[in-house]
Image (cartoon, rainbow, N blue to C red; front, top):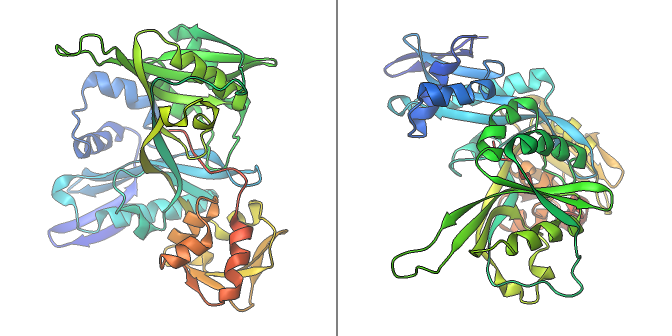
Length: 407
């Protein structure tokens, strides 16, 4: 499949990458991220940047743009995990931007995802103004925490035992433990080998790794690193401990891992970026203010590639039926009306209560925000005001969505 894009300064060919073109395409990405791709760095990244599922934009035979994805499964409300594309490595060379190249790349990728049977596509956005026009919407958010001088309440879960691992043991155990714990909340994705091929070194190799064990064995892990905060004027300040990855099977394991982190000697504060909005830590402390929220950011961006399959797969809350009309110009097969009930969702010819596009539908899908909030912001067209409270209860979820996996 090759697409030709007419540009003012020449034509671009959009096509799948072929074996042997991976490094040249990766260097386009490196330039966009202001990073030099050395032989050493490419040797580390090669396994996580296969030609499969990757598209390039070519001008005069050389790549000037790239986008790609890897296959995974993404958890949706109710516990099902759907086939999904984890989109990564999106870039256009600086001297070829704003000429329709990115639009053509994303269109080719979406069509390819649909052909492959991906129900969803997910990404982390480097810039928040790019992906909405391709039907992606903010589906989960994360908060950054700074914890200092904290102590646990007497009634907080006590947790089990925590042990430190060496690098080799951690590289074997952590991937297996993540898989065994499963996708416990909507938005989480499977971490497949193409992801671990680089993350084993980038995440595990550059962090200390601690594992929590409860009554049923290993049930949580944390990756962390430290940064010296001492200065000439403050020689006793200590270090900041930054959490790079923390996953646990239950709240007791979360408590056990945090107790361990807060007891590490010579540490002044613990920083934890990108934690779920319902992180339980503050509620377990004697002084909740010791756990300060220092930032709130978009975490994962979602795109419904197959709207009928996505709506049919997720769990819905109680409420009267609501008909949602979707207009999807990029994937016209998604356009139509869908009747949503507590028992499921299906296509209908009935009158629409709400009307939206794929971006806003993605913002609603995992339950991050209620329809009424997006309607008030002008993001959702309300045709039948009486239906809005029912939509709020239908789309509501018991657990806040969160991805928790960088890519």
